[in-house]
Length: 101
Image (tube, rainbow, N blue to C red; front, side, top):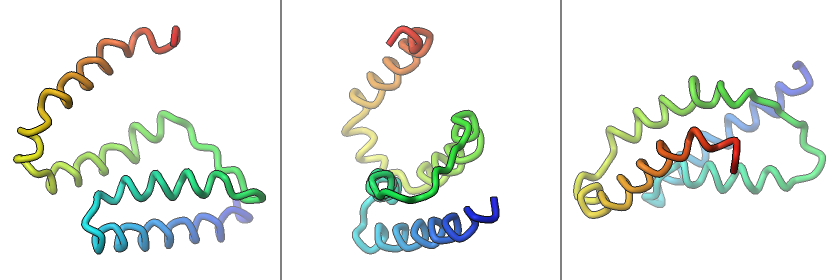
């Protein structure tokens, strides 16, 4: 764990900088975080950090969704409600069949 500490601190600093950069560009910061995570995953030689997927859903995802709910544009929600509800329905409907996919 101690050998991962500098890497994790660098990742936290990168996340803060990406969030400030996203605010400056006026785009949603989770988009930049996903893109940066993809780019970091292709860098060879970085330590492997293993996280239980259940922790993502119980620890990291709820604060992201809560913060996003305060900054949502209701005009955009009305504009895209059909697509959003259809995707939400499909995800909930197909969840029991996830192991088959």
